[in-house]
Length: 342
Image (cartoon, rainbow, N blue to C red; front, side, top):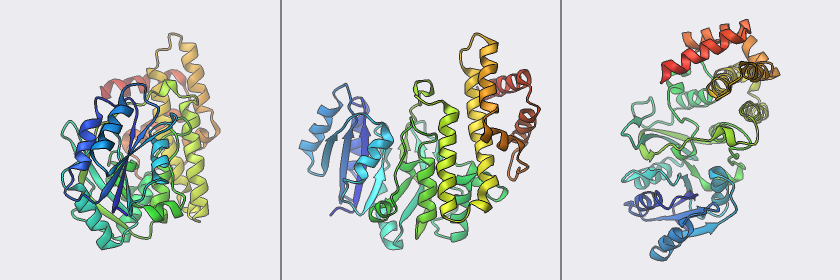
């Protein structure tokens, strides 16, 4: 049984697959298996996957109907044989020595879960806001809370980009499966990895945080307009799944307002920006979309909530403007905000 199973979804990735696979197979710790999950590609990806399989006995190729990246992660997790799981997008790559360091840490600490930093292809590094490796329960609690929603004590963790990303974590396989951890499809909820991240941190017997990056991640934009469910519907689905889980953990009463604030700051901001940026020629149609978002019962609760712990001045201003419920003012605010970000 290998120490590590690396699961890589492949969809029309013939041009980007080679750097990813090479970064895995050239690791200094060879005790791993690589599962390449072809997600019904319509280019030569499957052919390339089989070439890697013929060249290296550690590679196993699966071909499945199209379900998306997170569906491939689930598919691979139940077929993996390694002691630990690592999920890696095909457009990303492992840094040199990553496997040796991560496996050594997980085995030494007998950890269920490792969380670490990441770098980007542009050379940016997103490290964790800690000075050294730690399993301090108080710091791990900050991560849990930051995943649920904003708070004054968690402000540094809120700044960590991609904190819920599966590829920033190493999972002990047996624990992962015993706790029925899995990822959701992008078409069902958004953000698709958030529930699994929260569930992982709340069910982990021991979590270790490592500040430095171990993967180089290349972001691929999500085509929101092509999703079958609206963005606000998918945010609501994410909210409800997390709420149900936190209730099972008997912590929702303590975290409910924080969770509602997440919905306001993430779902509200993203959905309203998306509506304003969309190429709607008719202001009447734009205002109709704004109305549907703002009159969603969950959004009404979030806008009227008195919780502002950890809000920035910009976030407090946004909430005040949304409470006024004047569509022209809301449109102007988000158009200005969008321009200031470009």
